[in-house]
Amino acid sequence: MFLSKHTIAVAVLAVLVVIAVGTGAILHQMQAAEQPERPTVEKPLAQKEDRSKAESRPVVVREDAHIRTIAWNANGKILATIGIVYETVDFGIVTDDDGNSTRRGGVFPHSTIRLWDATTGELVRSLGEEKDTYIAAIAFSADGKTAAVSTSKHILPKPPEAPVTFETEIRVLDAQTWALKHKVKEFASALAFSPDGTRLALGGRSRLAEDAAFVRLWDVQKQKLIGGTEGGSYRVHCLAFASDGKQLAAGDENGAVRLFDGLTGALRRDFEGHGPLRSGGEQCVTGVGFGPDGKTLVSGSMDKSVKLWDVAAGKLLGSLEASKGPVSAFAFSRDGQLLATAGGAGEDGKSVEVLLWDAKTWKLKKVCPDQTMHVNSLAFSPDGSTLAIGAGDGFNSKVNTETGRAKTPGELRLWTLASPPGEKK
Image (cartoon, rainbow, N blue to C red; front, side):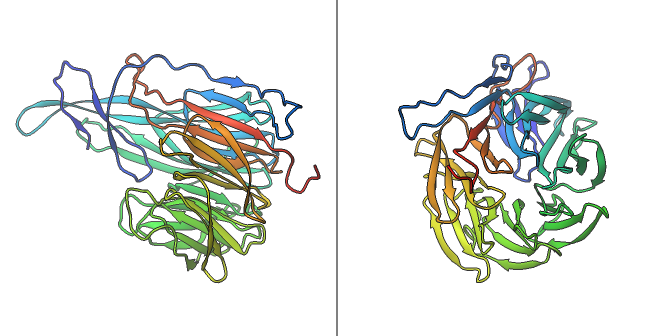
């Protein structure tokens, strides 16, 4: 699977990144790097009274882990993050058919769920690092009682020439104590609870078969599947229920946008989407959601567009002039009044901006500036008064030679908005 030719006496220099997201492995050159710094918290700066448009700055938490996903607990006081670091692993020496010795190895993810105080950015609790495990998704029910986490654990090969295998599961947990309620033997790249918390939507794709994408509904109380739609070649990347729970939207890594029955999981409609042809993930749908009236479906994509769809007719209503670069993250406030999008701000490929939209008028309300890393996840607090931004540039080729860990810095930003939607200023 990962052959990097070396002499026995030379350390592993070329390794493969192995993560359970269905996008394949990437070859990287490893170099030495300094020890990562401890997480730090920057408090917001004071508001300047002589500027009418001045705003307080965000709370910024910097970590040595790439922040992949963020989610709010229903009380609005706690924010959960999934942080990922990567470590080189030497499988051992293998011998090819010609008798040449080679050393086989890989880079594997270690994931940690951390809980943060949403006001101060202080760490409240860490659930501990899960070695060789990729945590792909986390979701909370609206009543704050239940959480769900999707994991894939990499089982290292023994002997070294054997393939890497995976143990996958979705854990349904008590959101207060984090005690396990039950498990679903499945791997989902996207999770979403219905508004009443009775159903958990699972979206993903099996590694073992063609045309194996799926959207399924899991009955949280009865602990069983209650419906869904099988089929589709590309992994489901995002899911969102309508506010009444009767409709479920999904977007996949090939640009498809689809509408499902939120009660049965049956496919209701295919939209034109963000491109019919696969081109290296450049049209991956990074977020879907419903406008406040439930009649408009919105989707954001790596093809640099945010599109508005008529749910009933299935027609494109228009597009927002969002970021100049790929839309990497996307989120609606719970009441559907606000939409946040993140994407590239220029041609340099490094500048990033987060935009805040009025979902009634589709006019731009605010720009959250000074993003220093790639934005992977956006999430509004339950009352819509705070926007959380999870960021990190992902796998970095620089590896600490003592720890074997790649340098993967991450960042969490908490922006306090002017006021919750609907609140008088």
